[in-house]
Image (cartoon, rainbow, N blue to C red):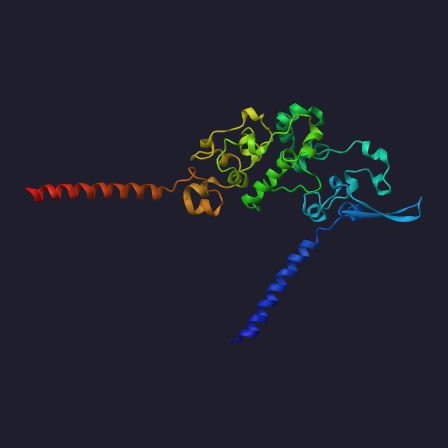
Length: 318
């Protein structure tokens, strides 16, 4: 049975619409909790309005940028279906919020995730132990909290998932570091120390922008931890890795950290093509056995040709 071009196009459109509708159904399955919708009516916007009982007027104010939340990022984060009062006091439902609420105890990540067998595969307890060894915990003590790096409103499990490309994993993880280390107003909330200038501190590193785009800060600034997918033991700057060979070698650090979730066999057996496909190619880190043998063979043929040429000239002279 033959179809005209217009009919084939109509059928194709129908199939595409059907596929998109299926995806939209799945996308809509994840919805904001009613409490969260109420809170985000104000906290997701640059401005908010309220009725002032004292003046009898509706007033418009600018939302504090530090308590403004991107509703889309919240919905797609790991806590997107949670209700705000799962972590915050239900008294926040009343507006204006009572000033004393700011002083109330806030739940931390380990209050829910610590010792919970449901999340045992994510190794939260081991992560907490490693984080407590880090330079941040050493400097800040009990004031150091998971949420200083992992915003509970937008956090996504990117670094431990194969669903994200390397570029996104690097960007998300580096933004966690830079949200503090590149912003003096945030950095000085936690310490009075002088904020190090990122560019100057890495002046030893060639092609800085290329490295920052393709490699996480964690690669050089954490201790190697084989039992965790992502090491949380942040080292003091004096112990940061500055040896290029650690990454640019066949048995490199990146395989143990950034590319840990990838199967090493697929890279070593399939060679260069697989490395590029997996976005795991690093100069000096990957070798293709066939090219090694081919280069030796070409070199041998070249030397043989030169020797034959020399011998032929000697014979002709005689």
